[in-house]
Amino acid sequence: MAELSNYKYRGARALILLHESHMKIWFETWKKAKELGVSLPITEDPNYQSLDTLLYHTLRAARGYMQWMCEKLELPDPKIENPPALEEIEKTANDYLEHLLKQWRLPLQDIEEERFYNPSYKSRWGVDYCIDAMLEHAVMHPIRHYFQLQELIENKK
Image: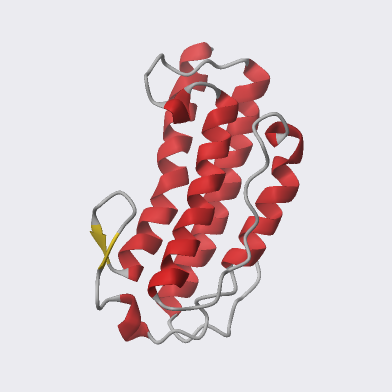
């Protein structure tokens, strides 16, 4: 894991590195679930129709979190490509995740700590977040899906 010593706010640096670590752990768990033929519980939620839709959802959300933060901080577009199409996602997810995580490391490095806490902004789903809280939310997202998949894997055994 690279140091990222150029961050003005070390709290953001920590959350960027935690996000990276947990996205990788989640993806390894996703691959294990796929290999074992794990099925997701039946739901109306379109993000949970299959393991592939869950993979797409998690990658798209990670992209969206960084785009939202850059937008609110009036930073340039973070240049994170769209996730691969559902038909291609399994075979291209490794490369896409590498791209996503590389692009995640760049945008927030020069932002002063104060801007991470104030003001707060309305998220795309209507909840108010400061930038620091959105970073924490982004870290927890793959952890939550890891937990979900890990339970399904355990129940499959």
